Length: 357
Image: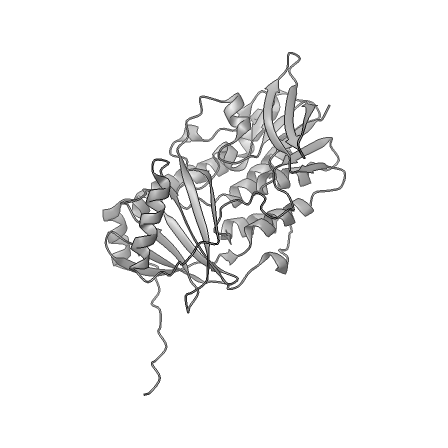
């Protein structure tokens, strides 16, 4: 009988596991060290809010997680209006897979971590405890727990099992890797209302060029390919994809899109809908919600734990909800055009002089 079973070891799950040191905790994660294992589609940029959250844990990021180049501006393209602006941004360019594995490496040895574990069923038993079944190396295993934590992302099995009425807004995140062919590496944010009411991104990373976006589920691959063709006409250079990645991504649109769980089931990070609706940045919320849950759990399961967790995450949920009021200025074409035309907070790129003939 485990005290807590954590499903998923992204930033939320691994942080929670690290903070629950000394308790009877089992972590189940589908990632493996073998090539070809699951890697989350992500541009791999660590935003200032996530940097601040790491700093509060007194954590220092190892150099092995960072990649070249470090970029200080985002090239923002509005394909509908044809406008292009550069805005200063202080993101850290990193390898997302190595970042996740670094966070897992911080988990204490007394916490049981099972990788390559695909959770296939979570159920409540008659005595109020939980039964969790997972496949690992071709074998089916079953464990029992007093609490279950869903840290398994936008398509959370834990949330779908216990809160099937949840109807948060979601998209398909598609991303491809290419050999870098641009003479000057860059990070870009692309708005293209013809293909998606969300946004797309590109980033140069260690000799590769990554392009991805969040698209409505219907015809998402066709939207992705059409957008690539449009960007090629704007000077983007893609070539043959080296790999393609895809997953669901949540984008809260209402207060009730935040789902923290209940009755012994807890949701953290993106599984709880805790992700920015404007930028889709979720690492900072994952770290903050994991810390809030760790501070909320008592010795024995009780309704008070959920009340404490709701209280500890209230400010985070308010902050994310307020970002909905920023969305029209980013995603409503006329308002976005007005903001970009104004040039507010943008910077002028100084081009080097041409060499003398």
